[in-house]
Length: 268
Length: 368
Image 1 (cartoon, chains in turn brown, orange):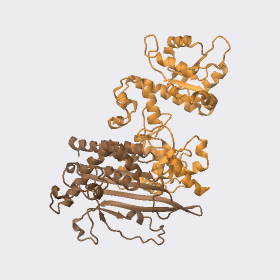
Image 2 (tube, helix red, strand yellow):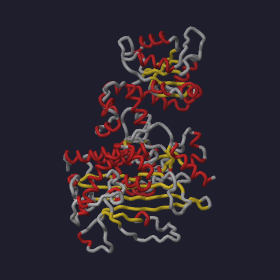
Image 3 (cartoon, helix red, strand yellow):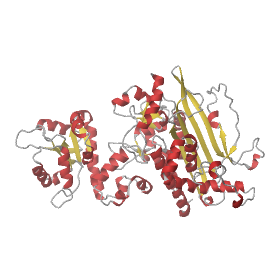
Image 4 (spheres, chains in turn brown, orange):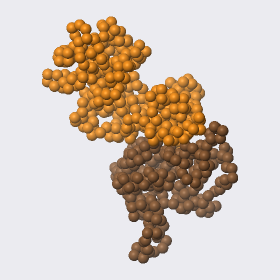
């Protein structure tokens, strides 16, 4: 099955944007380990590779890539971290995303598949013995199955959740102390591919790097705006369509505006 | 084909002959010896004799011996500069050829290492003390670089042929700038040195054997079936210029091979034992042994090697090395905590990246 040149054009554009992001990250975050950008870019540019979604027929219109084990070291232990003797904190990010090229720049769901896993690891020392520490969050696109019926808990299409499989894998060896690990709420969140996802990571976990990037790199700002328009806009507009509104009636002031509601919309 | 190499040194004939013999034991090259004289005379001689040699080896201190008829008052970079400036001129050298540098370790340190502006005058540097132990490797290097000059000069932009790969378009646009892609204003030596130093010797597009093994979770030394396993990857081995002395694999091909064989297992996310288990089951190889982690590390999701120990390392356990600016497609280089604490990294000349110092100091305290 051949991928049309029109589809390859879209995929190559996505690859070029990843290349831009990669260069910006290396400039502002020199210790970042993001070598998997290379295979993601190769994946997008290779017309013999068609992204697959489990249980769904091959579709040559799809774009997709996997970015695995991107590693970002924390310079310091952030405030309010428990235990307070933790060391060598790092964030490990995995993203797998698939979308349909035809859906880009429409009001449709921009993605068809999303796995977005954040794992934070560190170590603490007890009598010189290193003890691993772990926390994890994930953003998923819920897979609605026709035979699903009502799930026990409602799953927003895109939801953020603390914990998940990554933590479960550790279950046998994890000492939870007084901490209760609970099936936490699935919080609706806008979908994020690599560009918005890494912006989310920097804004939440590496705010100093983030503020430099968004004030010094026009290339970064342009990329984020472009992808917010492509990925976030259809989500927000569709969400807001529950209620009719007119722009004139919206009250925009310094406390209540797109940027305070969502800091990632920093240029609004 | 045997290449003829001209070796210029101010040492006694016996000494020079001993080095020449050490560098040509395999019979891949033939070395003739010349002593230096004033630069004008020597350049004229070299131009007159240019059809007799395919490459030059220059001793660094050509001015060491001031006795006899032929004496020189300059060092190798000065001569190399003179040779390079007379290339492709009507009264100069008709074709480009490699220039190698040979010297004692002390002289290299004293007169050459800090003079970085001279480094690209030479295609490779040998130390005299190592000729005994590494002579055969050096000989293969001399041959492969000399051969590379010939292949490149036959078509400076024919990257299919230079890198010996059918499907090169996607890769070549990533690793070469327009200057190389069009071949305008580039020399054979510039192309050869770029491929040798940036593509072959740095991990990224191509990976070397120990990185390949690390990414597959395998301990090469303990795995009797390693060579047999490598035959499965034969098609992905790099076969372009310089491939003889330096074995490399196309990493994108290796990854594709993995994904075709194990579509549901993302290689980089597996730990070493999971990777090896899949390989053993799929290919019926029994004597493949899982690589062990370096002490004081937390993971076996190996993706690189500790540069000091050349042993598998998950980058998350590594400390970034300070060094030259890397290209986007080149892999970062790391050393392990153990190698820093044990001072092995320092001994081998590796320096921590300035951005990693605080992180290191923070962990070091726990081991003091």
